[in-house]
Image (cartoon, rainbow, N blue to C red):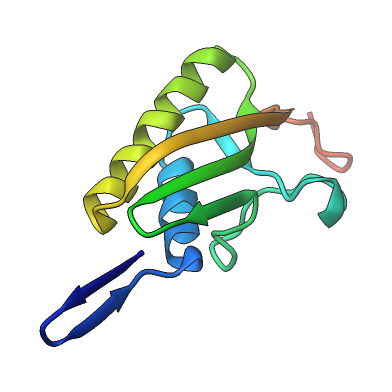
Length: 126
């Protein structure tokens, strides 16, 4: 996005929009993490260091389009998680950048299962 003012131009990079989208995605209930896709190897959870993993954006002068690759937490209805995710990402980008978000595409690439809280330990005395 580029805006021209009397004092100069304002540009918002694709990376900034991708970061906003990634953070909004992780705040969505039912999203266990982001997927790096096939090109990045095995599906891994998003770490705080790389909030753009699983996020692709195209940013124009006034509009943005977002593609997300996610892992859904087992037990959540996938279509509900995806709808809420689309709303959250769109709202965050519009609020922070003023860009019109024309689409938020979501690809579910996996389901994450919670690890058993009380897994038996091999050396545990019963």
